[in-house]
Picture 1 (cartoon, one colour):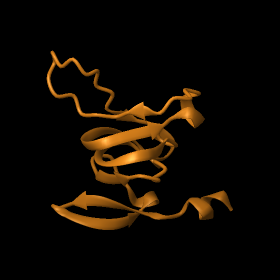
Picture 2 (cartoon, helix red, strand yellow):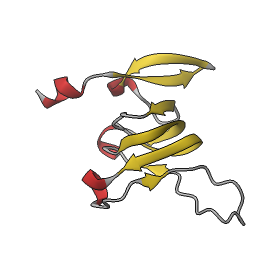
Picture 3 (cartoon, one colour):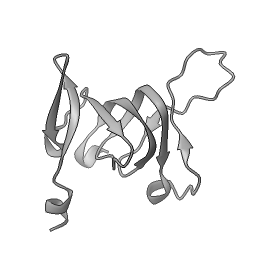
Length: 106
């Protein structure tokens, strides 16, 4: 029953176009578009971010929201934190992530 409740579509970029696809059809290498309220079904790395903030408390126990951003340069003063974990929720902002792991591998 939980699998049915989790069955939903998300937006990904494939072939230069944004398409809606079922979370069970996501593959490593897809670029997923994330937005406020999204619960991540995959592990990924942020490749584009606009004030992207995630709640990872259900996975890591960390109660503070975590700002997610793309590393700009090696000597940047801002600490980069580009990784998103399956089960995290996006609580603010939008972005794109490169999917690194899906299904039981995430």
